[in-house]
Image 1 (cartoon, protein in one colour):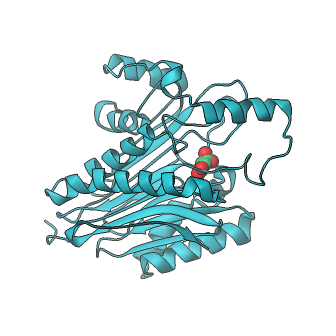
Image 2: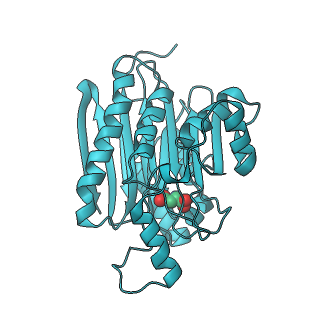
Length: 304
Ligand code: ASP
């Protein structure tokens, strides 16, 4: 039995050149997610439940590239990836390339608890969802006008657009420490705009999009999936914490490695069992919120 801990929750709502006019929605969305997760931690609930609740909130928020509001693939479809991991058991559940699912993070949790597997993809994951009473949502429940316009613009071939119009990265994630001293992490995404059907990024890959181990840390990542997966960024951050780095040192180190080894962009959030956290990114901004003892929420768009 671990000694009682002071709970801590960190969420992110993507790391990229978030346009200034979108900052208020990102801040509000991160705050709501943080509050949803904190409501569970504050009553002594498990970190696993807290990260699921925080991510579900962001999946419902059309601001982010997760659940409702996700980017469309080249075929004009929403395909979703998510992972959740319990640091006390190393149990994890993940889903990839699923359609018509409002809360992929909860489907990932069902894969963890109700199947003999850890990772289900595509039609098989959708059949598993149906078999477990997860309702299919209509395409309109996930599609927003902003993304339909972006898709039409992409099919039409660019035109005059702000620099990052075609390269947003609004994946969401949460990491938490609960009162029992357990860690958990979750990440959910619609991937990248105009991805090929079937493309899967880092987000649902254990050790890349997220990792949680009570012996080291809980981590969630965002950014260019093809780069993040090369350096197995979340597990690498956990390993650094296990070897003595603070969460901030580990976060800084893995982002430096990401840049140096792949030239890619991204951000990570890290929480350790001592109740310390780190946030690092090599993008212009990362949208995030931190809730610590007493429920004090620090929320913002951190600039590099
Ligand atoms: N990492 C995600 C992916 O490549 C995108 C993001 O973080 O926004 O699918």
